[in-house]
Amino acid sequence: MLKFEERLLPIFNLISKFSGAILMFSGYLLCANEKWLVAPLENFKNEYLSELWLSFSLSISITLNYFLRELYSVLKNNFNDWRTKKKMEKDEKIKQEKELNILVKRLGSLNCDELIWITYCVHYNYQTISASSTNGIANSLCSKNILNGGLGNVMSIPYTIPDKLWNYLQK
Image 1 (cartoon, one colour):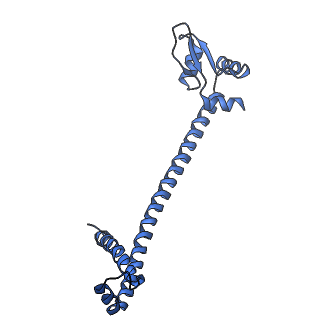
Image 2: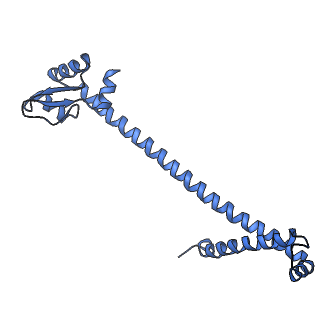
Image 3: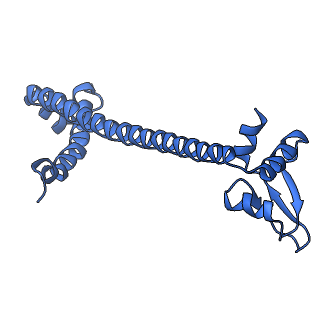
């Protein structure tokens, strides 16, 4: 079931739209001098001057309320979108840090041959190194996600250290 405010919202929107028209009409009648008005409107203005001022002020408040409510909803939606985006960016950064920490822990558990491969790459500044597809050390490092295997032939496949790990090793 709809909330009370949600049921009344279409009525308020309709009143707000009509109040804009009433605002313009009553404002015209109040501001117009005798040269601009035809006789029936001039008589109407003279006879209902206090009611015109009342409708003018009420229309201003209703129209202003409508515009401020719309402005608030737009700003609220933009703020919520911004906040959601920032939260997603923060979550993604935390996820990447966790992944990097896992890779760094895996570096500590490498055997001597695997450590020599990684040391060789860092020393000579090779992020990518080629080896055969049957190379046990390369396959072992790939299974630990320390290397990524690329496309090549049986004799030479490029193995690359992932960027996040490479940047860490360069420090």
